Every structure is written in C-alpha cells, then in structure tokens.
Image (tube, rainbow, N blue to C red):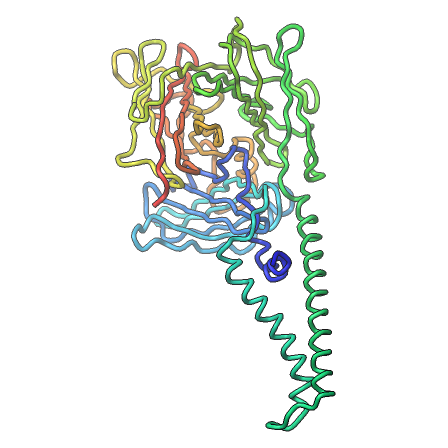
Length: 491
C-alpha cells in the first residue's frame, strides 16, 4: 500500500512541503503599510508553501479607490531584480472596491520582492516589498488524497494486467468461442509477466521518488544555529554556525539594519515578563559580543535578527540561563518589564514617567490571518497626546509580537514586517522613470514632527494568546508598553 501511495502521488510532490519560514519565527506572511507614490496601501503577502510555489497577494487602498492594481514577482538582487516579467492584473473584490487580490509564482529559493503598481486618478505609484521564498519541511500525503489516488492506482494496475491477459487470450479468437487450453495458459503467463512489470514499475518509481525527495531536501531551509555563552568578564558571546544549507549562504555578508548588524531580543520564559533589546557588535564572521545590562535571573529565549547582503533576513534562536546581575543600558539598547499577568482586555500600559501607551483596539474579536493596522497612542502624564516622541533607530517605533508558547515571534516596524535593509534593496530596484520612487519610510513621520500615534501592520499567523511589546523613544529615553491579545481562528 505504501509503495502504491508513492507511485500514484508523484503529481502531489509540490503539495508536500510546508509553509516557508521567514525572518520571523512561525510568522511567514509579509505585511506592509506605506506609500506607492500618491497611494497609501496595506499589503499582505502569503508566502508560498513550496518553491516553486504560489504566493497570495492582498492589496488594500487606504485613502483612495484605484482604477487598477498590477503585481509582479522578481528577485530582490541580481539580474532578476531588473528584468521584470509582465505583471498580473489583481482582481478587485466585489464587496470592497478598494481591495484587490492576486496569485504569483515564485520559482527559486531565496530573497524575492513583489512589485505593486497602482493606477488611478492621482496618477501612477509603485512600491517594491521584500518576500522570502523558503521551504522548511515536508508533509505526509493527506488522507483524503490517498483515498482518491490509491483506488485509481489499483484500478490502473489491475486494468493493465487484465488488458494484457485479454490481448493474448480471448482477443485472439472469434466471439462466442471457448478459449482453448493452450491459449488460456498463455493468457495466464502474460498476466503474470504484466504483474511482474507492474511490481518493477512500482519499485523503480518508489526509488525515483526517494531520489527526487533527497535531491530536493538540500533546498529545505536549515536555520543558522547560535551558541550563547558568558566569558570570564560576564560579556555575552554569540557564536553562529551554519549547519549546511545553500552554498550561497555565508556568515560574513551581514548588512546593518537600523545601523546594527544584529538585533537581539532576550525574552524571559515562561511568563514573558522581561524583554531586553540589545545590539551586539560583530567581532568576526559569525561571532558577536555584547556587555549585558542589568537583567533579572531566569531562563531566557534569545532571538537574533540578521540580514544578508542579498536581502534575505533570518532569525537565529537559542536559550540560556542567566543570573541576576547589574549593568547599564547603552546606545540603542532597551529593556522592558512586562510583569503583569495575561490581560487580553487591557488597552493601556503605564510608562515610567507617568504617561501611558493606549492600544486603540479595533472593535470585535481579533482574527488570525487578517491584515490589521495596530494603532498605539502615546499620552503624557497629564493624559494629553505626547509631543516629545523621537525616532528610535530611524523609526517612530518598534513592536514585538510573541505567542505565549514562543512558537511565533515577529519584530515589526511601522512600515511592516520586512527589515529596513531589505526594504532599501527593494526600493533601489525600481527603475521606472515615469513612476514615483517608493520610500521605505514614506507615510511615516520625520524626526521634525512625530505624531503621538504609532501604527504597525501585522496579522497573527495562528490563533492563541500573544504578548505585544511596543517600544517608542521619548525625550526621557526608550519606553516600552506591554499588551496582551487573544486571537481567534479565521472564520
């Protein structure tokens, strides 16, 4: 039975790989909010489950009704980033004239981009959004498909044996005549030979299947491994190791993202009541160091965001036990105390200076797989909108979305889930002379005048309980608000 399953399910090979892993653990979909020329868009890209595979693209115009939306996939760097194929015209929703959908093929493993072009009364706008095409694991053939394919395979096999026997036996005599014994014997011999041929075909097909699976396995994403330790001076040392994936991946090609080659998050488990955001310095290829600030003792999960020069981001995971220690935060480093219990109905988080961050939650339940603009308003100690916000590493704010079982981790900016280093590479590939260039920071405030409201586009990948850390910088320093969310399954 297993051999037959392998033989008749060859056509299902492209359906047996799981959803790819992006830079965000357990959160492969890409979300973007920003300008495509004069048009403000909210874009969600559901990355393909296989490579080659099909990505689902959702585009929502937030402040106008476009006449047409076109989308096209192309590589993020190299020649494939310049010579774009003919774009597909996205389909407009019958229920919402500002909502468009499309499906796009991504043919090669690695860093891609989806270029969105909008046409309307305001003219033409264009934006390029980074996307990663990575397959991570294989899945078993579904039971339902087995129930369909196995009977069909058996029908073809026994039908072939019956046809061969009939062609040597009954087909050689006139209708109505009894089959002579010698010819009957030859018919049974032909059936036996046909059965052997079927068995050999099944065996060879099974071996071919295994060979194809083994050949494809080298493309399955293998995350970088990280070994953390403390040296004799108490300094945190991080060693990265490549377990072997594509030959094109190296550890000496990392590019700065927000001015740092690594963004390291330490989350204390299981309560998720401490968050430390650090920026280790790169000492050598795959080697990072950082002086630890003050931390409370406990078990910490380490999640390190890095970006390769190809634009491919990765999140490297590890964990370690830390003892309570003294220390100082320096530079862009920050820490947060989220010691409150799980409170999914709480919409305000107090800040050390007496102010607070208020989550302007949408009405109704929060649903998985739904692109949402998460809005957070910063108030001063008097309850008025804060007027002293500053850019934090070039952005109005940073948010971390963590599922309470740590199966999901996403570091999100006001522009979306893609790292700014990848966004810059995508923006540089826009070559159209008559289309406005897209700015990764477009639609967000400048350092001269920051509003008191910070937004983050994101969609929870699966139902469950989540903790959200929102980080902003004020004149008094970096401050963090802590919120909780209960996410329902998609309808």
